[in-house]
Amino acid sequence: MSTPERDIEAVLDESGPDYSGFTYETPGGGHQSDVYMVTMDHRGEEYEVVVKFKPAGNVPFDVEPKLHEYVANRTEVPVPRILVFKEDPGLDVPPYFVTERVHGRNLAEAFAGLSPEMRQRILRQAGAMLGDMHSEIGFEAFGRLDLHDGRLIVRDWMGSWRAYFEQLTRGHLDRLDATPFADVADRAENRIDPALDLVPEEGVPRLVHDDFRPANLLFDPDAEDPITAVLDWQDVLAALPEYNLAQTEFLFIDSSFRDPDIRERLRTAFHEGYRAGRPMDFDDGYAERRPLYQLSTLLWRMAGFEAAFADASGLAQARAEAQYRQQFERLLDAIPV
Image 1 (cartoon, helix red, strand yellow):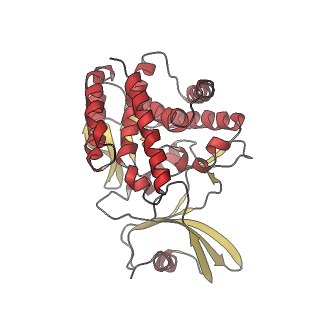
Image 2: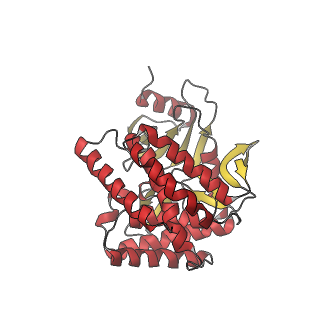
Image 3: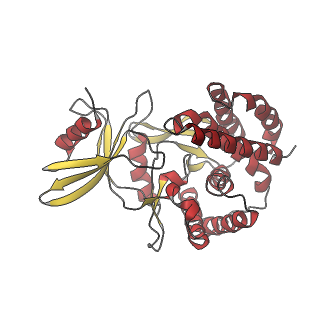
């Protein structure tokens, strides 16, 4: 029977150095159960790596290790170095890759309790990293990234950003049926449909990490640049940069803080960081489109609610559901009519 210990041992036997023993743990902050932080005893010293197995289901797995290399070679964004990638392992384990272990705390577990100055430093760096990605990496169409003959391609591509964003958002709406939020789908659709005219059709598709949130960042408060790693490159799009910006503002700022002064300070730091890496006019209709992009992001979170909170207590689930509903009402009201 397959167990994490047995599978990790198989990986180390196939791809690792000689070792006399190992221990492992799963990361916090909402990571999948198929990711393990492994510490080996190697010639009297500890050697740390991260092992990620392909999850169940028909999901692309070879894109993520390719993107680690692709982003590292083209930007200054900190991504863990790929040590091994086995698409067809010789032993009886799922496909896997092994990365270096980048030290740092999970940002989701600490962000709300950080000092205002540290939060602003983090938002400024996050903005600079997105500006770096959006400046250096572009594509010919909108869609999800895939691999073909070892090359990154846009899968199910579309030439219109508006059409692709609508497809993306309707996919989130369709998944609400099996969640506690099935009752809000019609209201969301009725507000989104007329607002789609605000979304541009044209623009240069840029690399967008579609799960860029505190849970996927490591940070070191003592480092000059506190974000030490960006993780989980499995959900990546070719999309308009403004979608990524609005999404990040929601996941880091608007869903975490109610105080308008705190929000404004963090948003200012984020915009300053972004403009340091790439020109952006945040006054050119972006504020109108932001709540629409953010509502799409919230619908994505609602669609994954039960999986995200499967191990949480009933009280924690109830609090999260109430918070999501409050955010939904706020965003619905903020979309121009």
